[in-house]
Length: 184
Image (cartoon, rainbow, N blue to C red):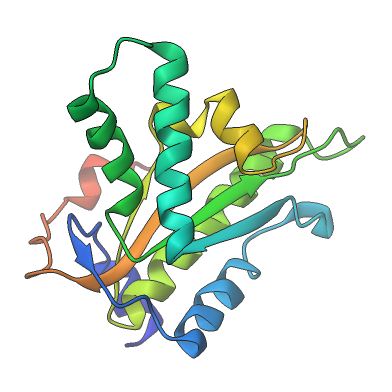
């Protein structure tokens, strides 16, 4: 798939299934991330690759965070929280490691991490995979951040759920450029 076709047709995959992408496919996804715009070449991001049994550990971490917030969660509610980590055979966590810099604001560094995430989404799509970018309360929960080994200056930008499409891709809704682009 050429670059413009991938950019014009990418959509979030509501459901994905296994197996996890092959290693060569994953390397392409990560290489795409490394080409994100990056003022000062700070590389203000890193990525955690979570698959196999580690997905269960991530689910348990989600449950620990949810129980901290609400100790009264029943077993069914806990299982619902745990299942969020199991929606794909691979979860890539984008971690921003932005730091104070005299010329490059933290916001710009975090946007670079977001751009790297978008590049991974497009690279997955270009290789026939489905992926979706999620955040939610687990992305900002201190228990999850500590459990994933994030440092003080790090934050989760995205949980990318990646796998093979389960069903047909979501139909694309055509958007009018005139609604978003104006002359000044």
